[in-house]
Length: 102
Image (cartoon, rainbow, N blue to C red; front, top):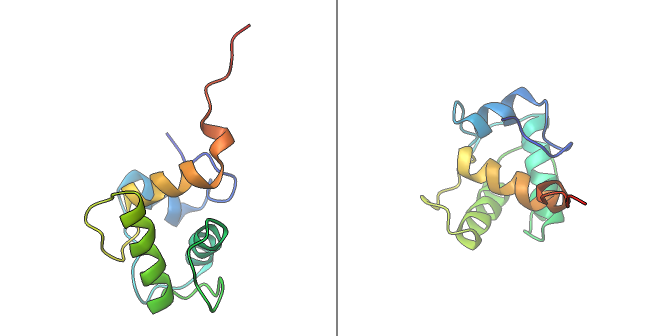
């Protein structure tokens, strides 16, 4: 099942993280990093430099805070399957509601 949030869906790197085929970590750069940074910022996790697309210390710290808040293990600064699943669920919670059948 692909990512549901329009923020993430279709990005090959984020989809690979979600599928468990890739891990995003310190030193990586690009639009996928910026998308994760924007989501973390919007969810209230501080990245003072903003969504730069550079996965450095501020992003690492925000990822660890996010993972701890969601009880994700290991609580390391790596974005993988569990982190992407939680981000996808949190960033657009309306997408995760079961429709009412009338």
